Image (cartoon, rainbow, N blue to C red; front, top):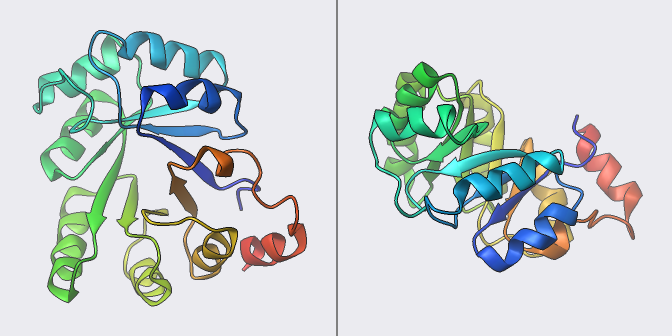
Length: 195
């Protein structure tokens, strides 16, 4: 199990310096534009971090297979984050890892998401919002991919509960969580991660 299962969700450009100094190994980049994307990715790589670009949130990127191929070839992104099954397929063809983001708004949405995951076969799945232990457990039992949970997670106890429910990683936009948030309760964190 990853000893530090936090993924930095970088949603504002002013968070980039904190991300670069943080303990995280991975970032989900949800800000920036085609003009500064190369610089952001290079800085993150120089800091030893992998970058997954949210294809629908970084400005100036197209939404087709050519844009994803460009991310791989020109920007050297490590992967993409997307809600689109076609983008997952394009990422695989471009040699990029993919995270399929799904939203649990009701039972029908979850069932549709499971069918989509089985069809597109992303490398990982991100469940939003991440504050639903029962849904985390049920989804983890249904899919084979590593499960990331994110959205609305604000407290250490919520991270511990999500990990104990089966999440493999926690995605958060809170820079205070990008440094080890478990320094005051290492014992309970270790219990959660050893499941």
